[in-house]
Amino acid sequence: MTGFRATIVVSDPTACPVADTSTAAEEPITSVTRSRASANGTVVEEFGVASATAETANATTAELTPIQASDRETVYRFEREADADCACELVERSGTPVSSVRADDGSLQLTFRTLELAELADIVDELREHFDGVVVEELTQDHDDETSDPVFVDRDSLTTRQREILETAHEMGYFDYPKGANATDVAAELGIARSTFTEHLAAAQTKVLDALLEK
Image (tube, one colour):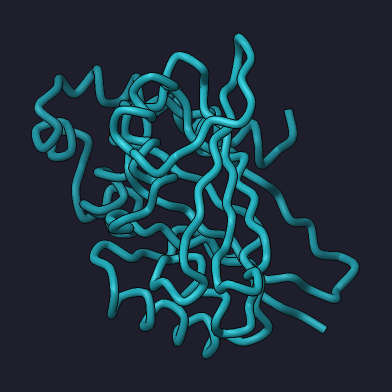
């Protein structure tokens, strides 16, 4: 049996305390847990943020309750209605559990598995009815074939500048054959010297190839 693993980014998940707090957090929020709906129809969620963000979190999201604190991390708890149209709830109403939640700079990244692409399309359509900026960031397929050789490339290994350069070059067709743009074109679009572009591009490509070749 094969299936798909999808990561969807919701760039503007309105009224989400986790996403709201991530706008002031020093690091992405990755430790998010949720309970099942209780008898009174509420869901309890908890998440941890760097302790340096604690004061800002309390000031910006009044419904958060700190339940644990250390020098490194503060854990917050909040309640919401089970029938709220939050991003996680909308995904799971399809019968697909969200396996991981990540919040960074106000956006949510939701990862889940599905057997059919049609189901993924339905989930994306549902999210887009409620939120702006819904994008499928990553989609991978599981295979029964024992000869498959999946490789994970950590995008966080790239600097912000390297990612910007790769994305711009890709969008302009620099990697196409024949090329849609040359190095001078891309450098001009980025507002940098051609030599600077090629230097950053080489560094980014080296990191990606190291991951693919398992160096």
